[in-house]
Length: 406
Image (tube, rainbow, N blue to C red; front, side, top):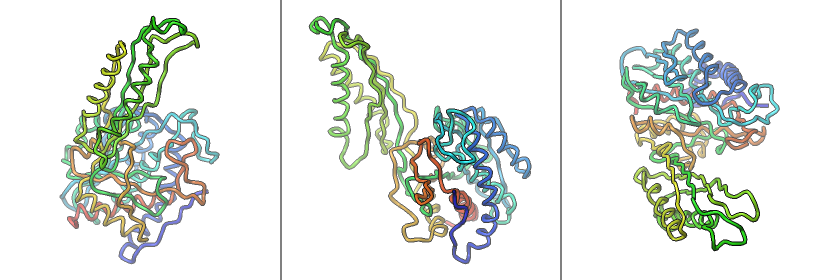
Protein backbone atom coordinates (compact mmCIF):
# COMPACT_ATOMS: atom_id res chain seq x y z
CA UNK A 1 0.00 0.00 0.00
CA UNK A 2 1.23 3.51 -0.79
CA UNK A 3 -0.04 6.88 0.31
CA UNK A 4 -1.34 9.37 -2.26
CA UNK A 5 -2.26 12.14 0.16
CA UNK A 6 -0.35 15.40 0.20
CA UNK A 7 0.65 17.55 3.19
CA UNK A 8 -1.11 20.85 3.75
CA UNK A 9 0.54 24.12 2.74
CA UNK A 10 0.23 27.71 3.80
CA UNK A 11 -2.65 29.68 2.27
CA UNK A 12 -0.61 31.39 -0.47
CA UNK A 13 0.28 27.99 -1.94
CA UNK A 14 -3.28 26.66 -2.18
CA UNK A 15 -3.95 27.45 -5.90
CA UNK A 16 -0.92 25.50 -7.12
CA UNK A 17 -1.44 22.81 -4.54
CA UNK A 18 -4.97 22.11 -5.71
CA UNK A 19 -3.88 21.74 -9.33
CA UNK A 20 -1.06 19.39 -8.45
CA UNK A 21 -3.26 17.44 -6.06
CA UNK A 22 -5.59 16.77 -8.99
CA UNK A 23 -2.60 15.53 -10.99
CA UNK A 24 -1.44 13.07 -8.31
CA UNK A 25 -3.34 9.99 -9.59
CA UNK A 26 -1.81 10.47 -13.05
CA UNK A 27 1.67 10.85 -11.56
CA UNK A 28 1.20 7.52 -9.80
CA UNK A 29 -0.13 5.91 -12.99
CA UNK A 30 2.82 7.11 -15.11
CA UNK A 31 5.32 6.04 -12.47
CA UNK A 32 3.83 2.56 -12.21
CA UNK A 33 3.80 2.06 -15.98
CA UNK A 34 7.46 3.02 -16.07
CA UNK A 35 8.19 0.78 -13.09
CA UNK A 36 6.67 -2.20 -14.89
CA UNK A 37 8.85 -1.60 -17.96
CA UNK A 38 12.39 -0.88 -16.72
CA UNK A 39 15.12 -0.41 -19.31
CA UNK A 40 18.89 -0.19 -18.99
CA UNK A 41 21.10 2.68 -20.11
CA UNK A 42 20.74 3.79 -23.73
CA UNK A 43 17.98 1.19 -24.22
CA UNK A 44 15.12 3.29 -22.79
CA UNK A 45 12.98 2.98 -25.94
CA UNK A 46 9.63 2.19 -24.28
CA UNK A 47 10.30 4.89 -21.69
CA UNK A 48 11.08 7.42 -24.42
CA UNK A 49 7.95 6.39 -26.31
CA UNK A 50 5.75 7.05 -23.26
CA UNK A 51 7.33 10.46 -22.67
CA UNK A 52 7.02 11.38 -26.35
CA UNK A 53 3.40 10.27 -26.45
CA UNK A 54 2.51 12.50 -23.50
CA UNK A 55 4.43 15.51 -24.78
CA UNK A 56 2.79 15.20 -28.18
CA UNK A 57 -0.62 14.82 -26.58
CA UNK A 58 -0.09 18.03 -24.60
CA UNK A 59 1.30 19.97 -27.56
CA UNK A 60 4.73 20.44 -25.94
CA UNK A 61 7.62 21.03 -28.34
CA UNK A 62 10.28 18.36 -28.00
CA UNK A 63 13.22 16.64 -29.65
CA UNK A 64 13.75 12.88 -29.53
CA UNK A 65 16.77 10.57 -29.96
CA UNK A 66 19.13 13.03 -28.29
CA UNK A 67 22.26 11.10 -27.31
CA UNK A 68 20.45 7.97 -28.60
CA UNK A 69 17.40 7.74 -26.31
CA UNK A 70 17.26 11.13 -24.59
CA UNK A 71 14.47 13.68 -24.99
CA UNK A 72 14.50 17.47 -24.63
CA UNK A 73 11.22 19.39 -24.28
CA UNK A 74 10.52 23.09 -23.89
CA UNK A 75 7.64 24.94 -22.26
CA UNK A 76 7.45 28.71 -22.69
CA UNK A 77 6.04 31.22 -20.25
CA UNK A 78 3.91 34.25 -21.04
CA UNK A 79 6.85 36.34 -22.28
CA UNK A 80 10.59 35.94 -23.04
CA UNK A 81 13.04 35.61 -20.18
CA UNK A 82 15.58 33.30 -18.59
CA UNK A 83 15.87 29.58 -19.30
CA UNK A 84 15.77 27.08 -16.46
CA UNK A 85 16.48 23.41 -17.16
CA UNK A 86 14.96 20.51 -15.23
CA UNK A 87 16.77 17.19 -15.57
CA UNK A 88 15.30 13.72 -14.98
CA UNK A 89 17.10 10.41 -15.51
CA UNK A 90 15.18 7.49 -17.04
CA UNK A 91 17.21 4.27 -16.80
CA UNK A 92 16.81 1.24 -14.56
CA UNK A 93 19.22 -1.29 -13.02
CA UNK A 94 20.13 -4.94 -13.75
CA UNK A 95 18.38 -6.19 -10.59
CA UNK A 96 15.67 -8.85 -10.19
CA UNK A 97 12.76 -7.24 -8.37
CA UNK A 98 11.48 -8.99 -5.23
CA UNK A 99 8.52 -6.71 -4.47
CA UNK A 100 5.12 -8.39 -4.68
CA UNK A 101 3.12 -5.41 -5.93
CA UNK A 102 0.72 -5.11 -8.88
CA UNK A 103 3.16 -2.82 -10.69
CA UNK A 104 6.29 -4.98 -10.22
CA UNK A 105 8.77 -5.23 -13.08
CA UNK A 106 7.65 -7.27 -16.08
CA UNK A 107 11.25 -7.53 -17.34
CA UNK A 108 13.27 -10.28 -15.68
CA UNK A 109 16.58 -9.09 -14.29
CA UNK A 110 15.69 -5.41 -14.65
CA UNK A 111 14.22 -3.07 -12.08
CA UNK A 112 13.71 0.58 -11.22
CA UNK A 113 15.56 0.24 -7.92
CA UNK A 114 16.73 3.83 -7.61
CA UNK A 115 13.64 5.96 -8.23
CA UNK A 116 14.29 7.05 -11.80
CA UNK A 117 10.74 6.05 -12.72
CA UNK A 118 9.61 8.62 -10.16
CA UNK A 119 12.01 11.26 -11.48
CA UNK A 120 10.57 10.86 -14.97
CA UNK A 121 6.98 11.02 -13.71
CA UNK A 122 7.73 14.18 -11.71
CA UNK A 123 9.31 15.89 -14.72
CA UNK A 124 6.37 14.88 -16.91
CA UNK A 125 3.92 16.23 -14.36
CA UNK A 126 5.82 19.49 -14.10
CA UNK A 127 5.92 19.89 -17.88
CA UNK A 128 2.18 19.27 -18.12
CA UNK A 129 1.30 21.65 -15.30
CA UNK A 130 3.45 24.48 -16.64
CA UNK A 131 2.12 23.99 -20.18
CA UNK A 132 -1.37 24.52 -18.77
CA UNK A 133 -0.31 27.58 -16.77
CA UNK A 134 2.11 29.69 -18.87
CA UNK A 135 0.87 32.77 -17.04
CA UNK A 136 2.81 31.65 -13.95
CA UNK A 137 6.26 32.39 -15.37
CA UNK A 138 8.33 34.19 -17.97
CA UNK A 139 11.06 32.66 -20.09
CA UNK A 140 11.52 28.98 -20.90
CA UNK A 141 11.71 25.74 -18.98
CA UNK A 142 13.77 23.07 -20.75
CA UNK A 143 13.11 19.48 -19.66
CA UNK A 144 16.03 17.09 -20.12
CA UNK A 145 15.02 13.42 -19.97
CA UNK A 146 18.41 11.74 -19.70
CA UNK A 147 19.40 8.13 -20.40
CA UNK A 148 22.05 5.98 -18.76
CA UNK A 149 22.75 7.69 -15.45
CA UNK A 150 23.53 4.34 -13.84
CA UNK A 151 26.15 3.79 -16.52
CA UNK A 152 27.92 4.36 -18.75
CA UNK A 153 26.66 7.93 -18.34
CA UNK A 154 24.22 9.90 -20.46
CA UNK A 155 24.72 13.44 -19.19
CA UNK A 156 27.97 14.12 -21.02
CA UNK A 157 26.70 12.86 -24.41
CA UNK A 158 23.60 15.01 -24.02
CA UNK A 159 25.71 18.08 -23.26
CA UNK A 160 27.87 17.30 -26.30
CA UNK A 161 24.65 17.05 -28.34
CA UNK A 162 23.86 20.64 -27.38
CA UNK A 163 21.02 20.30 -24.85
CA UNK A 164 22.25 23.36 -22.96
CA UNK A 165 22.07 25.49 -26.14
CA UNK A 166 19.25 26.93 -28.28
CA UNK A 167 18.21 28.54 -26.01
CA UNK A 168 21.16 28.86 -23.68
CA UNK A 169 20.38 27.37 -20.27
CA UNK A 170 20.95 29.88 -17.47
CA UNK A 171 20.53 27.43 -14.57
CA UNK A 172 19.57 23.80 -13.98
CA UNK A 173 17.87 21.87 -11.18
CA UNK A 174 17.17 18.21 -10.55
CA UNK A 175 16.06 15.96 -7.73
CA UNK A 176 16.67 12.46 -6.49
CA UNK A 177 13.96 10.59 -4.58
CA UNK A 178 15.84 9.56 -1.46
CA UNK A 179 14.95 6.65 0.81
CA UNK A 180 17.67 7.72 3.22
CA UNK A 181 15.29 10.53 4.23
CA UNK A 182 11.66 10.17 5.35
CA UNK A 183 8.75 11.50 3.37
CA UNK A 184 8.22 15.18 4.09
CA UNK A 185 11.89 16.14 4.11
CA UNK A 186 14.21 17.69 1.55
CA UNK A 187 18.00 17.45 1.59
CA UNK A 188 19.60 20.51 -0.02
CA UNK A 189 22.97 22.16 0.42
CA UNK A 190 25.33 24.38 -1.52
CA UNK A 191 28.73 22.98 -2.42
CA UNK A 192 29.45 19.27 -2.69
CA UNK A 193 26.39 17.03 -2.37
CA UNK A 194 27.62 13.80 -3.97
CA UNK A 195 31.07 12.36 -4.57
CA UNK A 196 33.29 11.86 -7.56
CA UNK A 197 33.22 8.31 -8.89
CA UNK A 198 36.49 6.77 -10.09
CA UNK A 199 37.21 3.11 -10.87
CA UNK A 200 40.39 1.08 -11.02
CA UNK A 201 41.36 -2.38 -12.27
CA UNK A 202 44.77 -3.70 -11.33
CA UNK A 203 46.44 -6.94 -12.44
CA UNK A 204 49.45 -8.14 -10.47
CA UNK A 205 51.83 -10.23 -12.60
CA UNK A 206 53.84 -12.69 -10.52
CA UNK A 207 55.45 -16.04 -11.30
CA UNK A 208 53.42 -19.13 -10.58
CA UNK A 209 54.59 -22.44 -9.29
CA UNK A 210 54.12 -25.25 -6.80
CA UNK A 211 52.53 -24.29 -3.48
CA UNK A 212 55.23 -26.24 -1.63
CA UNK A 213 58.09 -24.39 -3.37
CA UNK A 214 57.38 -20.65 -2.93
CA UNK A 215 61.06 -19.75 -3.28
CA UNK A 216 60.73 -20.54 -7.00
CA UNK A 217 57.85 -18.13 -7.48
CA UNK A 218 56.64 -14.56 -7.12
CA UNK A 219 53.35 -15.02 -5.30
CA UNK A 220 50.80 -12.68 -6.89
CA UNK A 221 48.35 -13.25 -4.04
CA UNK A 222 50.82 -12.13 -1.39
CA UNK A 223 51.76 -9.10 -3.49
CA UNK A 224 48.10 -8.30 -4.14
CA UNK A 225 47.26 -8.60 -0.44
CA UNK A 226 50.01 -6.10 0.38
CA UNK A 227 48.64 -3.74 -2.25
CA UNK A 228 45.11 -3.94 -0.78
CA UNK A 229 46.44 -3.19 2.70
CA UNK A 230 48.64 -0.34 1.49
CA UNK A 231 45.78 1.29 -0.41
CA UNK A 232 43.95 1.76 2.88
CA UNK A 233 46.67 4.14 4.03
CA UNK A 234 45.77 6.68 1.33
CA UNK A 235 42.72 8.06 3.12
CA UNK A 236 44.04 7.27 6.60
CA UNK A 237 47.46 8.90 6.16
CA UNK A 238 47.53 11.00 2.97
CA UNK A 239 44.18 12.81 2.90
CA UNK A 240 43.46 15.76 5.18
CA UNK A 241 41.37 14.36 8.09
CA UNK A 242 38.90 17.23 7.59
CA UNK A 243 38.19 16.02 4.06
CA UNK A 244 36.27 12.90 3.07
CA UNK A 245 37.52 10.13 0.85
CA UNK A 246 37.01 6.43 0.17
CA UNK A 247 39.22 3.81 -1.47
CA UNK A 248 37.43 0.46 -1.68
CA UNK A 249 38.67 -2.77 -3.24
CA UNK A 250 35.46 -4.56 -4.14
CA UNK A 251 36.87 -7.54 -6.07
CA UNK A 252 39.93 -9.75 -5.67
CA UNK A 253 40.42 -12.81 -7.87
CA UNK A 254 43.42 -15.15 -7.95
CA UNK A 255 44.25 -18.83 -8.08
CA UNK A 256 42.29 -21.99 -8.83
CA UNK A 257 43.95 -24.71 -6.76
CA UNK A 258 45.02 -25.15 -3.14
CA UNK A 259 48.55 -26.24 -4.03
CA UNK A 260 49.33 -23.81 -6.87
CA UNK A 261 50.81 -20.35 -6.44
CA UNK A 262 48.90 -18.09 -8.81
CA UNK A 263 50.62 -16.35 -11.70
CA UNK A 264 48.29 -13.34 -11.53
CA UNK A 265 45.93 -11.61 -9.15
CA UNK A 266 43.26 -9.13 -10.20
CA UNK A 267 41.50 -6.50 -8.15
CA UNK A 268 38.87 -3.89 -8.91
CA UNK A 269 37.74 -1.01 -6.79
CA UNK A 270 36.30 2.47 -6.54
CA UNK A 271 37.47 5.85 -5.27
CA UNK A 272 35.15 8.58 -3.92
CA UNK A 273 35.80 12.16 -2.80
CA UNK A 274 34.03 15.53 -2.63
CA UNK A 275 36.81 18.04 -3.34
CA UNK A 276 37.15 18.72 -7.11
CA UNK A 277 40.75 19.73 -6.40
CA UNK A 278 41.60 16.07 -5.77
CA UNK A 279 40.92 15.11 -9.39
CA UNK A 280 43.90 13.07 -10.61
CA UNK A 281 45.49 12.88 -7.16
CA UNK A 282 44.10 9.49 -6.14
CA UNK A 283 45.07 7.98 -9.48
CA UNK A 284 48.68 9.10 -9.06
CA UNK A 285 48.88 7.92 -5.45
CA UNK A 286 47.39 4.49 -6.21
CA UNK A 287 49.90 3.99 -9.02
CA UNK A 288 52.77 4.96 -6.70
CA UNK A 289 51.67 2.39 -4.13
CA UNK A 290 51.07 -0.41 -6.63
CA UNK A 291 54.40 0.24 -8.37
CA UNK A 292 56.29 0.39 -5.08
CA UNK A 293 54.85 -2.81 -3.65
CA UNK A 294 55.34 -4.71 -6.90
CA UNK A 295 58.94 -3.51 -7.29
CA UNK A 296 59.76 -4.58 -3.75
CA UNK A 297 58.45 -8.09 -4.46
CA UNK A 298 59.72 -8.53 -8.00
CA UNK A 299 56.25 -8.47 -9.56
CA UNK A 300 54.84 -6.56 -12.50
CA UNK A 301 51.49 -4.85 -12.78
CA UNK A 302 48.96 -3.28 -15.14
CA UNK A 303 46.72 -0.53 -13.78
CA UNK A 304 43.66 0.82 -15.59
CA UNK A 305 42.05 3.86 -14.02
CA UNK A 306 38.82 5.57 -15.09
CA UNK A 307 37.36 8.86 -13.85
CA UNK A 308 33.66 8.19 -14.32
CA UNK A 309 31.81 11.16 -12.76
CA UNK A 310 33.12 14.31 -11.03
CA UNK A 311 31.61 15.46 -7.72
CA UNK A 312 28.10 16.95 -7.71
CA UNK A 313 28.74 20.56 -6.62
CA UNK A 314 25.76 22.88 -6.17
CA UNK A 315 25.78 26.61 -6.84
CA UNK A 316 25.12 28.61 -3.67
CA UNK A 317 22.45 30.92 -5.15
CA UNK A 318 20.48 28.13 -6.85
CA UNK A 319 20.73 25.95 -3.74
CA UNK A 320 19.29 28.83 -1.73
CA UNK A 321 16.45 29.11 -4.26
CA UNK A 322 15.62 25.42 -3.83
CA UNK A 323 15.94 25.70 -0.04
CA UNK A 324 13.55 28.65 0.11
CA UNK A 325 11.02 26.78 -2.01
CA UNK A 326 11.39 23.56 0.00
CA UNK A 327 10.63 25.47 3.18
CA UNK A 328 7.19 26.36 1.77
CA UNK A 329 6.46 22.77 0.76
CA UNK A 330 7.72 20.88 3.84
CA UNK A 331 6.61 22.98 6.76
CA UNK A 332 8.03 21.09 9.73
CA UNK A 333 11.21 22.51 11.34
CA UNK A 334 13.12 19.35 10.43
CA UNK A 335 11.73 19.32 6.91
CA UNK A 336 14.80 20.81 5.21
CA UNK A 337 18.02 18.92 5.93
CA UNK A 338 21.01 21.17 5.17
CA UNK A 339 23.87 18.74 5.83
CA UNK A 340 22.74 15.89 3.61
CA UNK A 341 25.65 14.35 1.70
CA UNK A 342 26.51 10.96 0.27
CA UNK A 343 29.54 9.24 -1.22
CA UNK A 344 27.25 8.00 -3.96
CA UNK A 345 27.85 9.57 -7.36
CA UNK A 346 25.70 11.06 -10.11
CA UNK A 347 26.39 12.33 -13.62
CA UNK A 348 24.23 15.38 -12.92
CA UNK A 349 27.70 16.65 -12.01
CA UNK A 350 28.51 17.25 -15.69
CA UNK A 351 25.54 19.62 -16.06
CA UNK A 352 26.60 21.47 -12.91
CA UNK A 353 30.08 21.97 -14.36
CA UNK A 354 28.54 23.79 -17.31
CA UNK A 355 25.87 26.00 -15.71
CA UNK A 356 24.97 27.00 -12.14
CA UNK A 357 22.45 24.67 -10.60
CA UNK A 358 21.29 22.55 -7.71
CA UNK A 359 20.67 18.84 -7.27
CA UNK A 360 18.71 17.92 -4.16
CA UNK A 361 17.22 14.95 -2.32
CA UNK A 362 13.47 14.53 -1.85
CA UNK A 363 12.66 12.27 1.10
CA UNK A 364 10.60 9.29 -0.04
CA UNK A 365 10.82 6.62 2.69
CA UNK A 366 7.82 5.55 4.73
CA UNK A 367 8.79 2.86 7.22
CA UNK A 368 5.19 2.46 8.42
CA UNK A 369 4.21 1.26 4.95
CA UNK A 370 7.32 -0.89 4.49
CA UNK A 371 8.75 1.58 1.98
CA UNK A 372 12.21 2.10 3.43
CA UNK A 373 14.49 -0.36 1.65
CA UNK A 374 17.71 1.29 0.42
CA UNK A 375 18.49 2.24 -3.15
CA UNK A 376 19.65 -0.60 -5.44
CA UNK A 377 17.94 -3.16 -3.19
CA UNK A 378 15.64 -5.71 -4.91
CA UNK A 379 12.79 -4.54 -2.66
CA UNK A 380 13.33 -0.82 -3.16
CA UNK A 381 10.12 1.19 -3.41
CA UNK A 382 9.03 4.62 -2.22
CA UNK A 383 5.99 6.51 -0.96
CA UNK A 384 4.38 7.94 -4.10
CA UNK A 385 3.17 10.96 -2.14
CA UNK A 386 6.63 12.31 -2.94
CA UNK A 387 5.69 12.58 -6.62
CA UNK A 388 3.29 15.46 -6.09
CA UNK A 389 5.72 17.10 -3.68
CA UNK A 390 8.41 16.95 -6.37
CA UNK A 391 6.15 18.65 -8.91
CA UNK A 392 5.26 21.30 -6.31
CA UNK A 393 8.92 22.09 -5.66
CA UNK A 394 9.82 22.23 -9.36
CA UNK A 395 6.88 24.50 -10.20
CA UNK A 396 7.74 26.90 -7.38
CA UNK A 397 11.40 26.95 -8.44
CA UNK A 398 10.30 27.87 -11.96
CA UNK A 399 8.07 30.66 -10.63
CA UNK A 400 10.78 32.17 -8.47
CA UNK A 401 13.72 31.77 -10.83
CA UNK A 402 12.07 32.68 -14.12
CA UNK A 403 10.25 35.62 -12.57
CA UNK A 404 13.44 36.87 -10.97
CA UNK A 405 12.32 36.36 -7.35
CA UNK A 406 15.60 35.22 -5.80
